[in-house]
Length: 110
Length: 113
Image (cartoon, rainbow over all chains, first blue to last red; front, side, top):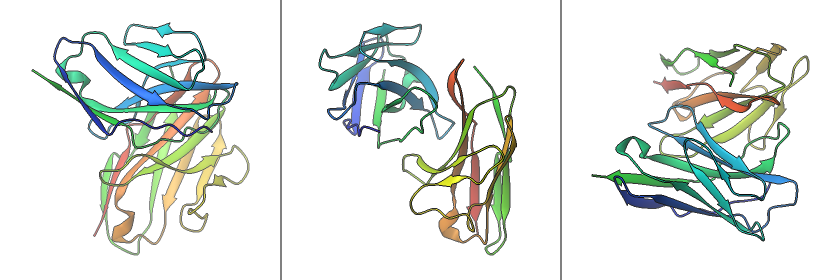
């Protein structure tokens, strides 16, 4: 599984877009980029995943660079409830183990 | 997605004793995993629980300390054996199925005194 690196923390104003970067320069061709978040030591919550095309769902958008070496998770209108630790993981899609890095602590402030 | 019920949600245990954590999934999952999250840290994979065979442990984790069972496609247990205060952590299980990807239990917060 490819290693990912993320900034340790970020702040975002409530109502603004939160853009969380992730570097995965060693990602292989069949590995997907997954994003999870963890609020207050609850179980991680799935956000979104993608291979090479940009993806959007009701929670977020995922922008993957053309060379696939980095990606950005976008929360379009951050709320206080989005304060959490966000994890970016690169892994094969078929039941491979998820290896969590340190993640990014996102603090949304009013 | 699948829902995982994890029990107990928290426990306080005496050192030298053992605790078994259970995870029940509301539908069949192909893969199940067990993680440990020490205070203020990220999740660390303990092992992959294999149905009908011995679990596959990650480096630094051994079967004698963390025996795992997985009798069917919806259930797994993790036992933390001969506990010491260093075992105080949150333990989480996870399941994967092709239809809905990965899902996580809500965790077991273990304190060893």
